[in-house]
Image (tube, rainbow, N blue to C red):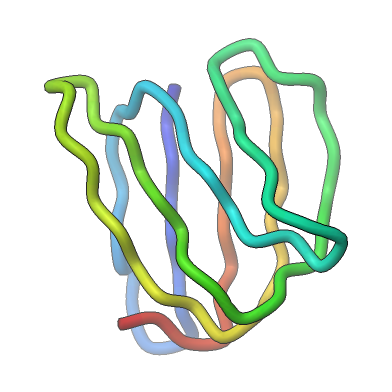
Length: 81
C-alpha cells in the first residue's frame, strides 16, 4: 500500500509500505493493505512505518488528520520530525 506523510512545508515521506501505526485522537491505530476507509484526527505521537523491506521507520508528529483507503494512507501532519 502507499503512504504519504505531508506537512505544510513538504512531503516528509512517500512510498510503498507493508503497514503503518498512527497516533489517532482516540488511540493508536494500525493500517494494512485493504483497510476499510475512514478519516481520523491525530494527536501528538509517533507514526511507525513498516517498510516492505522489513525495516521500520518512525516519525514524530504534533497533530493533524489521516485519511485511509484500501490502497493508501495519507497523513497530513501539523509538523513532523
